[in-house]
Length: 336
Picture 1 (tube, helix red, strand yellow):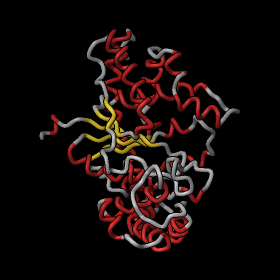
Picture 2: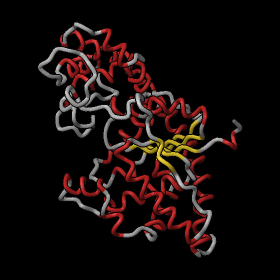
Picture 3: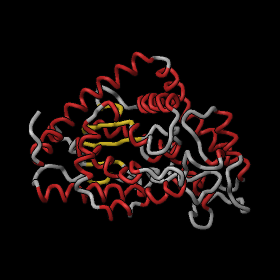
């Protein structure tokens, strides 16, 4: 496939917390593969992060940590564009225009706005309300064909397509209509909490034992897996409804080792949780060890990270400006 035939993938991740095992197994581990066949643009969305209150120094540190972890997970700055959202002003500029093509009712129905409003009742700000519009701007700026998301993010793709369709209806041919790029069966579409296996693994889990972070130390990973919730039966079989905890661990072990679910069941047939849970922990420790070590090396190389995000922003800004100029012309703004 020639470079001109490649489709464009855009993905953004917030620096408001640490990347988790769920983030990695569910999406990020596939990113290095995608960059071989697609034009890939990966953004650390620090502008989205301030919809909830952030401590400034912590946000700057977290932004660089996410960038370093992306590279440590296999993203190549020579093959993918890696940048920080606030370094490309066109994101905010296009978001304002798209705000004027987004209906109040469709924005108010967004599940994330309702959820975050409940969690941050003392800070229900307008940015939180218009968050999906900024996300739409992130995607549409780069004429993205595909956006890697979990099933729980499908609503954001839908509103992005609604906004793009409405704009294209008035000004044909402005935006590519993006589609969600969803994990295939067996690609770790959803990794659940170790403490509550019916809930998605999340860095905001009230029980810190439920979430594995990419930068967790080996001893912390082992402790969390040894305490992982299972059930009173000792059988190690895949049964997401009847045995959600065990099934979650089986999926994690399979993804960490490259084995099939059947191979995992056979490996631990007749064995108990006392042997199974440490084995899962050890597999994850070895999976994450090179990522953690590489991230630490990169964070100690601030000059290199600055070079990556500076060059990435320059490449991103060039693409974004082409789209923004077209939008400004179509809505009637005088050319600068």
